[in-house]
Figure 1 (tube, rainbow, N blue to C red):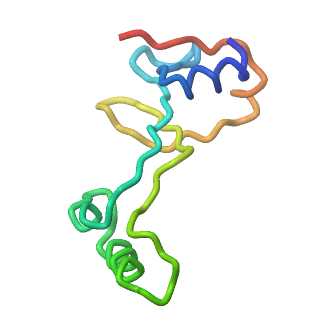
Figure 2: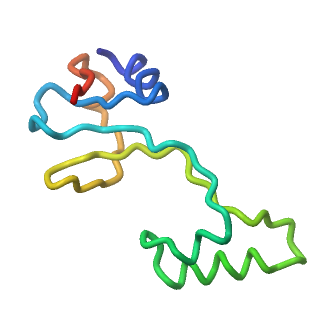
Length: 104
């Protein structure tokens, strides 16, 4: 499939892969999420200093800060051993038609 269909499939929650990728490797769009301030201190994916920054902004009444953090518009690549990393499309990913849906 071409890049326009790739975008539609990712938004629809599909897992996709390039034809030449290792068999169990694929990409997906992380579901946009709102993470409440009570969850942030428990998050393993954030460094302590980042948690501290968010907690400070949550308590800062002088700003129009909302007590949440937001995840949106992230594409993840799943590699060996379920390793997830950010996926950034390269020109070779955009100008090809070898994208396919990854089926479990």
